[in-house]
Amino acid sequence: MGKVHETILEIDLKALKHNFNFLKSKLQSNTKLLAVVKAYAYGSDANEIAKYLEELKVDYFAVAYTYEGVALRDAGIKTPILVLHPQPINFKTIIERCLEPSIYSHKILNAFINTSEEESQNNYPIHLKFNTGLNRIGFNTNDVETVMSKIGTTESIKIKSVFSHLGASEDLNEKTYTNNQIKSFDSIVSKIAPKLNYQPIYHMCNTSGILNYPEAHLDMVRSGIGLYGFGNSEKEDSNFKPVATLKSVVSQIHSIESGESVGYNRAFKATKNLRSATIPIGHADGIGRQYGNGRGFVTINNQPAFILGNVCMDMIMVDVTEIDCQEGDEVVVFGKSPTAVEFSKTVNSISYEIITAISQRIKRVYLK
Ligand SMILES: *Cc1c(COP(=O)(O)O)cnc(C)c1O
Image (cartoon, rainbow, N blue to C red; front, side, top):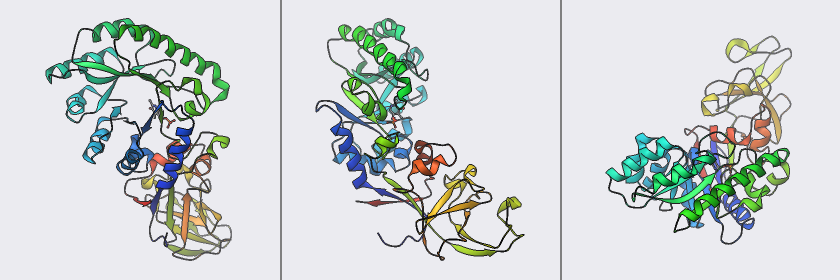
């Protein structure tokens, strides 16, 4: 990799392959792996990531919203795509673009049946989502009867899968809660299975579920954060490789005299002479204002340079008084070290938030 000349998000596809293989090594050979590529593949560019995962023969994709699935189809992705959180206004598009909806309420079920009948569909694949404790979206456990009898009234749809979502799979203090979710899903499965003359795919594990609850892998697992390099604990993180590295460059260096201020609203006032470096990345790029005023830092020549004053829209100024650096030097915001976990911890945030926040105006550069 040559010298960095502007802010880029470097995407390491070898790291993605490593994470994919590591997750596969945790699964029985007949358990399918669904790659969650919502939110621009957690900031890494869904099209490129999905194309590569398709080469690796991933079994399924999931996105949150319909238009994310449309973008994958436009990019030529052929693998089945589950839309986790669709709205009725998108149902026609879902069918036109061969996307598969999560059906999570009676209202959504009725609306999807109406659309698929209008569109003269036969056995259109749907995924039934059950709420087993997260209380986010999904049918309740006691909805099984009514859901199944409604589905029995139409030929237009077919249950491709039945799934639920764990609420605290990374938190080993919540094992009882998680085990109750697993039990509750088992009981849903045992009510649905005898009513069908075919076998849907049953699934409930996210990344931490894959790592912590092997008994709940069932027919398929869904991984997002693991593919992008994080295991939600220090121990598990060491098995993964972060895929994304956010890099930038020192644009300008200023000598600041004691008494001068740096940045908007004079939020930083120098009490001694110092050196500041201006970096072309700001809150419009995903580095929120909460990182300002000495909380967040970037890394220049392997040393932390803390943010001076407020984060601007397109820039930050950092303290390089003690760092041997010059204009044009490379800056690392997060990547292999510090990781997105370490960077986001400075503001009590998590890897998921910072990696999905990186603006699409930042160029993605792929390492193959
Ligand atoms: C986002 C999401 C996932 C992926 O979770 P990770 O913790 O990133 O592996 C899996 N299932 C559902 C329903 C999701 O919304």
